[in-house]
Image (cartoon, rainbow, N blue to C red; front, top):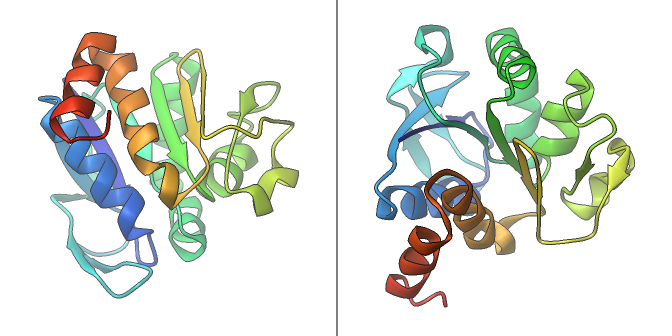
Length: 178
C-alpha cells in the first residue's frame, strides 16, 4: 500500500509527522509531495523535505493525505496540480484524507465534501455543508479530522480504512496509543 502526503510551506508539523509515522508503522509506503519546493518550512519552523514535487506525481497510491495548518492549507489549495488530482481521485472514488483546515480550505471549495458528513478545525466549520463535531469522520472514501490533537486518531482511521482494524489496533498498541 502507498500513501501520498502533501506538504507545503506553513503545513502543520504535528499532523504531517504523526500521520506519516503511523502510516509507516502500519507498513504503508509514504511519499511526501510538495506544492512549493522540495524543502518546505512548516508552521512552527520545522524544515520538511519532500520526495517529489506535485507536478511529478503519478496517481498510483491508495490514499492522498492533506495535513492542515492555515497557511499550509491555503498553499495546498492554490495548487492547480493538487486540485486536479483531488478531483480525479474523488470522481473515481479513491481515498482522500484531510485534517484541520484542509477539509474546509482544500476539499470544500472543490465540492468534494458537498453533501457529505465531514469534520475540520472547528473555526472552519462554516465551510462544510454537513459539519460533524467529532475527532474523525469517515464517509465512504473520505476521511476528515479536526486538528493537531486528533492526528493519531486520523492516521489510525486511515490505517483501518486501508489495512483493516486488526492492523490499526496493532499499530496503536505498539505505539502505546491504545
